[in-house]
Length: 197
Image 1: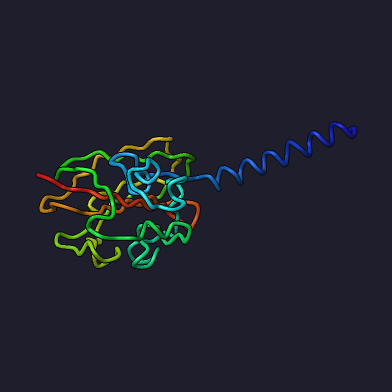
Image 2: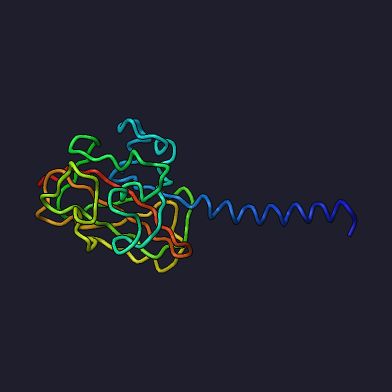
């Protein structure tokens, strides 16, 4: 093998290794329908959002919610210290999207894909206190919708038909969780909703 061939071979190996690392590092996603808190920050509808306005797809933290994962008070940021503004909570802090009880479509937009364990959706209890930081006590801890990912690699857009439970009206937060199969992490998306009948 001559010197030029050896150098080209070395460059090719380095590029292939970097591509693998980059793909894993960029495995991100956000809920684009109904629009999540972080996406509305990106669009400038929610303001004072900090760094998440530039990367709504990066709200990543330890998986395992509700038995593990991010601690109470930092659920909206997934426990990610880069996005503390997402954890601010009041009845008027965040713009809300209108939903109706019953069947709704939830769409994740994936800027890079990752093998998936599951997609899960949790909703706050009727009568929750919207003036306090999000905690497990505010949520119904059984997901109202769960989709098995079968450890497959999803497409760049993933749609789920989920039934928003009856008996929920007014302001509710839906916590959407994308559980990754081959890492210890998940992606978290808070969706601020106004549920009307």
